[in-house]
Image 1 (cartoon, rainbow, N blue to C red):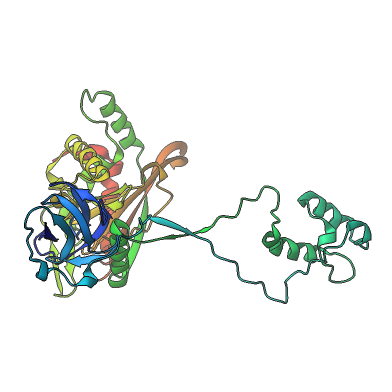
Image 2 (image 1 turned 180 degrees about the horizontal axis):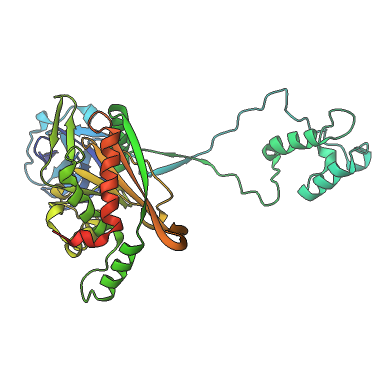
Amino acid sequence: MGKFTFKLPDIGEGIAEAEIVAWHVKVGDRIEEDQPIADMMTDKATVEMESPVSGVVTAVAGEEGDVIAIGSMLVEIETEGAGNEEDDAKPAPQMAKAEPEPVAPIAAVEVQPAAPAEVVKPVLIEDVPAQSREKTTASPAVRARAKELGVDLNDVKASGGHVRHADLDAYLSYGSGQGYRAPGASAKRADEVVKVIGMRRRIAENMAASKRHIPHFSYVEEFDVTALEAMRADLNANRGNRPKLTMLPFLIVAICKTLPDFPMINAGYDDEAGVVTRYGSVHLGMATQTDAGLMVPVIRDAQDKNVWQLANEIGRLAEAARTGSAKSEELSGSTLTVTSLGPLGGIATTPVINRPEVAIIGPNKIVERPMFVGDTIEARKLMNLSISCDHRVVDGWDAASYVQALKKLVETPVLLFAD
């Protein structure tokens, strides 16, 4: 028998460490060659590690959420062969861990409520047989309210000779600690402690860095998309076997057509080097919600694609992100991001910039409202569009001018197809 130490390999150019996001084995498990042992997340992708040998797991590097360096021990396996270490060269005892309890992603913890302040703590009368208690006095209004709530007024301490509304309020505030729950109220639930690991941790770090480093400002404009929605309906009615068109492909075409006149929007800012790069191609990030958290797959060279090609890419990349099959290069290198909540879109948003980009665009939901068109009132389909920009690179006038140019194209959709 021998010891085989599986060290975390170099899983990406320039990667120095990776986070353990899921264990597929534990100490004591018998595993086979090529069996998955752990999922490791880097800045670029999540990679499944497979065992190079068969044997029994004798040690693991840490718990889910721990970050380990490239080249350090991931698992130690007792194998039938000679292994890759001599017995006297095995890792120090502190590296081996006793078999850990399975770690659940969410652990429920009962938290005892703090004792209420003496000033307002209601005092319940002692447990005396009901027939021996003095009759509690209260106004008809208080009695009616107590009856409606199912509260026995004999259980409520009277502060001024008879029970008042304030006394009843105090009892209701702290009575739940004595087992009271008002009719219709939800049952008390235990607090939950959720460990922030994997994609959720990466999102938290990226968003915090973005808000910490970038002075954001947002601008919102209303678009009349009535004509565009009519065009979209006509195209969908005659699409054949092509994908159904949403609003997003049209918006992307409009974004790409207007960017040449506003190069500061399609840019990246290296604040350490003090350099702004204005990109010639539009590699459009598409914020996508997945079970693992928010991911941003990238539509490469969006400026070269028509609405049908964009619809294909949007569907393909969204599916790859949701199923975890997106490649590393499909999740990096964006120059500008679009984020949309679809039908949940809301009235307006103030999206957070995907650093080191300098802008992010957020279309909101389409609503039908009456609107003056000349001297008449018509039902029109309206949509607010939000943009957040890095004020170190983009001035407010530039952002507003860009959105107005975008508005012109969207509200005159025939221009989207003109050279």
